[in-house]
Image 1 (cartoon, rainbow, N blue to C red):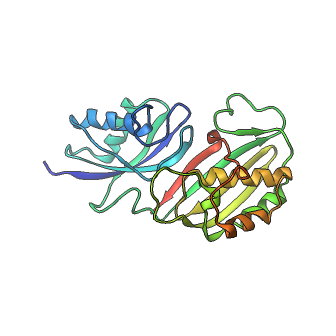
Image 2: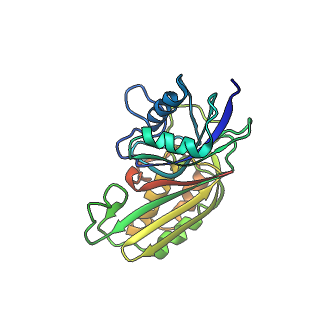
Image 3: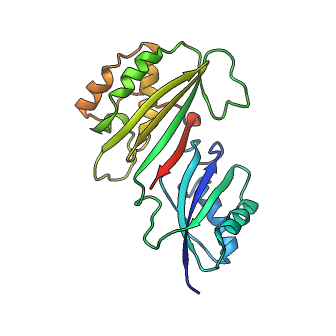
Amino acid sequence: MAERRYKVAIAYDGTSFSGWQFQENAVGIQQVFEEALSWLEGSPVRAYGSSRTDAGVHAKGFCAHFTLTKPIPPANLVRALNSRLPDSIRVIRASYAKDGFDARLSAKGKEYRYFVYQGGILDPVMAPYWTYIHRPLDLDAMREAAAHFVGRHDFVSFAANPNRKLDSTVRSVFSFDVSRSGRKIVFKVRGDGFLYKQVRSMVGFLISVGKGNEKPSAVKELLEAAAPRTARVETAPARGLFLWKVFY
């Protein structure tokens, strides 16, 4: 039978997973998703994701592609997959994709959002998705610092070692906004791609700026130095991070 390639948007609560990528010693979202696909197909199916997400990171608009031989209309595919997936993983929409479409290689950019709850008491229902910080944060200083990230830079100072060879640590950040509503602070960053733990490292450093531990200009200094990340750049906890959208 002829194969059809599909593109799906997936939302997931990453709290109990080791990230998207399949791993030998932990449960990744890819493994659970492929098990549901393989049940529909009646044989093993490999799904290819738009990116690797860290353990505990969530997604609103993760993208994946795969091929099936069974002629399942996209709307039926959404219902069938969601009937087999746990409540923490939902297929939001599905469509046919061109043969050359690749969820990772065809992506033009990605948007991540990071959620911080500052001071007061954090509702337990929000705890898996918001990072709690009791100290006051200087919003203007964080915005000033975030502006230094925008542009094309070598982000090696704001990334962790992925334990695999990289062609380059240069990336482009299109925008980096920091907004506040009451006690809720949202960091929204868009770029052409991100290094391992880059977003969490950037947010972690902005929080240090907000606390007064670093000056906003320190972002520019670290980018220009282009030296491997040190303990000076803290990694924000995974639970506050969402892969919000992938652009094609």
